[in-house]
Image (cartoon, rainbow, N blue to C red):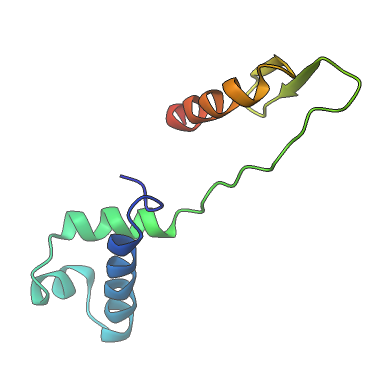
Length: 99
């Protein structure tokens, strides 16, 4: 479950992390006092502290019938301007799910 799809849960955990930091307790002690599983605490701490990836909007240059993108992971995409709106979101989701 991504933090983007469940902001309420992420906000709840962020409040716990702020309270934990100001408490001076260890993570285990804080979790015990607040009836939290330590594994959930560490999982959500890594999730909410993880930098969010942001996609940059692109547009196909005028006068061409295709767009070529070379991704940092070595993948090269060649899409026609006609298929770009239909195909690109699915391609980006697949890349995100794979990483």
